[in-house]
Image (cartoon, rainbow, N blue to C red):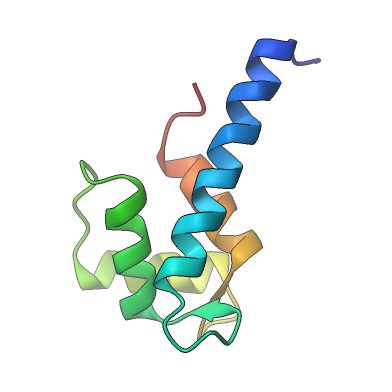
Length: 85
């Protein structure tokens, strides 16, 4: 399967947006997001997504090292949650 230039451009734009949300939410600038920071980043990136703290913890376990979420994990999570177009 291949991507068209339009699809790739849309995906690249989303990735860059998610990177910005990650860096804004990483309050202590340690390169990873705690549960609280992750919740803030998700709400900033996709305001229509409503998650409770239990769901955020489950996502942290799935997309991180059980304590914090890296930028790569956050981008993967957001691409799963949101739309890429």
